[in-house]
Image 1: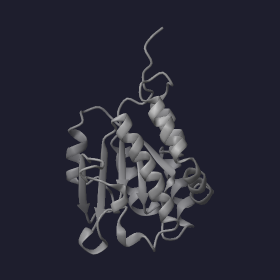
Image 2 (image 1 turned 120 degrees about the vertical axis):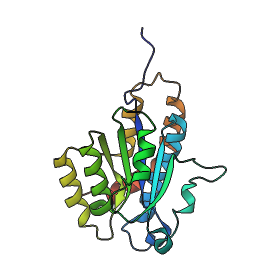
Image 3 (image 1 turned 120 degrees about the horizontal axis):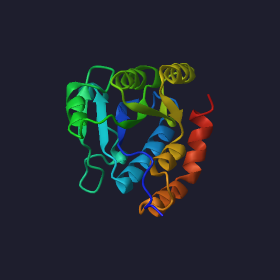
Length: 204
């Protein structure tokens, strides 16, 4: 029998503008953060590159501290760029993505706002030929009514709108891979928070 292999071979996690100043403005922001924490832990276990951005950091603040990005005991990002453009695909991010190799990637996006930065990032990535997963329990907007409009558009454009758990299991593809036990444990650890996030954010 052939050795088990992962289903997704070039995944990359994009974290869009999860900053301190948005805590009180974004619908169910704490649940977006919780799902992102889950994906970060799984990304560490699966050695998935992490790309993050902030929007006008001087005005809107740093990336939320509890995500632990670029901390000594946290997740080391491939790039943590500040931007004024709404799309994450600024030159610094483009350069870091190209440094991973010329092959098209499977990019999973979390963050805010669904109808602005998440949408424009997704459209740019699709235009470049990448496969894009938008995580429904990890994206939000100030106005919750914007979320389903954006997700419906992104589906029509060719993005895959899915849940964090579905993405992680698709990423693995086989319970025989060495990382399966660790990732399954992370899924179990976040089970209650995932249920709450799905009920709030993936109901649209």
